[in-house]
Length: 119
Length: 114
Image (cartoon, rainbow over all chains, first blue to last red; front, side, top):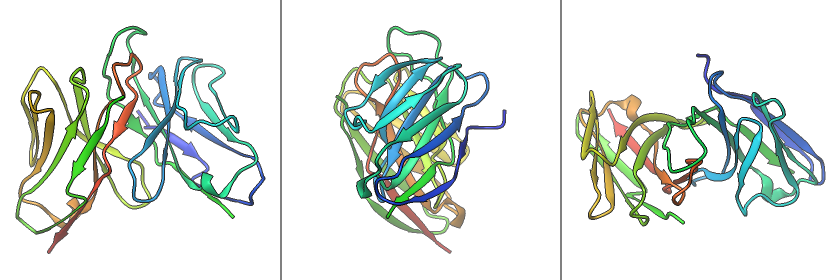
């Protein structure tokens, strides 16, 4: 168990550029979550995958954001035409979900995050 | 959806004293309450969690209590040490959802003075 890893750890970009982040979950975890955290705030849910299926998206996830998990393992989060308001820490978490129905609270383990700064 | 309120936003204690952080939640269907510790520049690290079938859980110097009737839960840290200094977040499931998405409190910055 090597934990959740994220790459890159830091990204500085200019407004209008596209950026892509990668998350590698804990190997046996089938659920993967993306959260965004701005300075001084708690993480806010963006989207979640069960295996390769994207099952939930927050209203925070504008159409400039897209996430994929093509083989049910690693995931990517892309932000197109970045804006200064996108500057934040992007966190990935994973858990071992056991089903798709009913509330099943599995522990989520977070990665170190990718800190994005849009100039 | 779930709303989680966390207090206090900052807490300063002397090394060796106890620290208590409180959270309230709005959705009575919520049944899982994790606590995370976040150090500067790092992701949140789970330190303890509690499910609604118990009222208290302890792990060494850390304990969590849950009052389902009042819809609040608290983190208790005893014999605080300087390395306990960090931001602590409580969380609860975002609505009655199958995916276990979490909604977080606003965080408590704990400072332990040596």
